[in-house]
Image 1 (tube, rainbow, N blue to C red):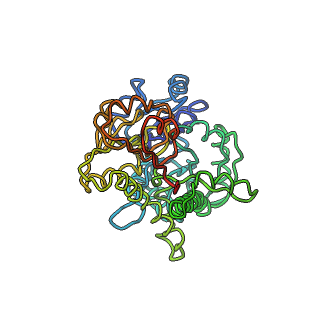
Image 2: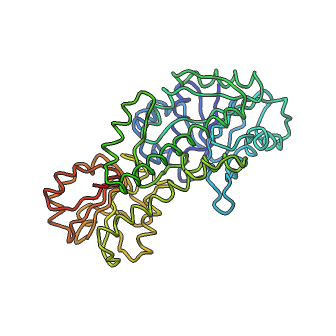
Image 3: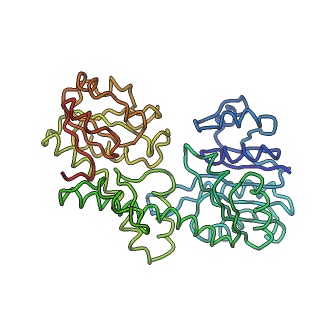
Length: 414
């Protein structure tokens, strides 16, 4: 069987290479430089296990800028960002991919949409776009199999996680389940396409709402004089309670955006919308903690540790570090950034020593493992100030305070 995967990003490329363990695979991307690099043996981003997998399947994988006409299966894994002007899903890439596939589609082919989309997209947008190529809906099968993976664990999660496959009819769902059974070791459950779309949005909205709850707990803890990081483990000893960790906001392509995809289809989203607003407010809240530490000196220099949205990856999509940096610069601060996993950002990341030299305040926005190992004695030698705001509870507070730093941890009101 021949598989064509359209979209070679953080999920699409690993998925394509996993399929290439069992089938001939053509990976498609509109980025010609990415296509050329892959065909020359170069990966476009870091992901644990990906280099080894790429080397293993090179003979079964090639990259192209347009879908091939001899595939039996087409998998769409293109981005679905939020259109900020109207606060709805931007389905431009999905539509373009479906139209391009429609031009080469043959009878009995299977098309699977993996991209996260508002409920109803597979039936209302993907199918009509495919039909523009000349075939009617009855001549091909369509299913939706939303991805369940995070950067840094993509291969493990694509293989190990359970999956949901929704078909436009039973036959399409069964064909898609058979396809994914080649690479997925978890249980694959079938349903209809719209339910599968809804399930993915439910998953990420659940995370977003519960992170917002943790962030509100952190703010309350600051107000009443307790440490939320002491309180959360105690609360979680209750067998039916699982409070998450607070932070400077929510990042990544999914959790920050998917709740909006639900909101565009309903008016019954009050809790969802409030949770989104709470999480979006956290960058400003952390900046408020910084301003308190610096006693209103808006000409100070701030060093941000962490541009990525989560620990130990280089992914900066929707990172809360970006609004924090913009707010800080607008307030008059000079902002520097250090992130061992990120080379390009709104403020160009620099090496640690250069980033902290003569700085007045450190702000930890990402819980990279490397930051827990930063030597506070060395930082004291390089910095002018002794203020630290740890928005991830990453640092060893005692050792930093022993080195003379005044450490404020998000959610600690003591």
